[in-house]
Image (cartoon, rainbow, N blue to C red; front, side, top):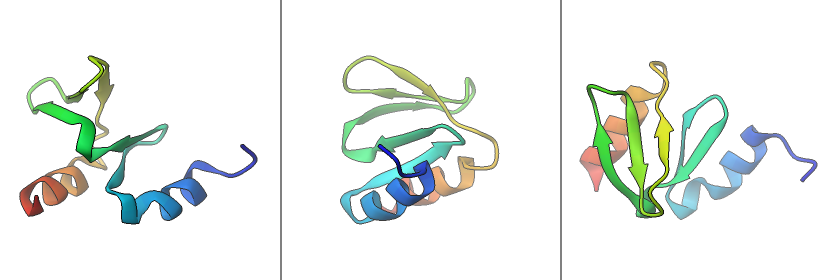
Length: 66
């Protein structure tokens, strides 16, 4: 891919993707758990992805809308 993550994020925003870290873009349909105290999310494939402090509020807002 020759696009920046920001460009990919803009294209996928309509498909329930969210940037939760400087280097992580996730599909919220595959989020299974948010460990608030640990600061990461668990995905349906078992991966744990860190949530940055600056993106935490975006994640909480999107989760409350679902």
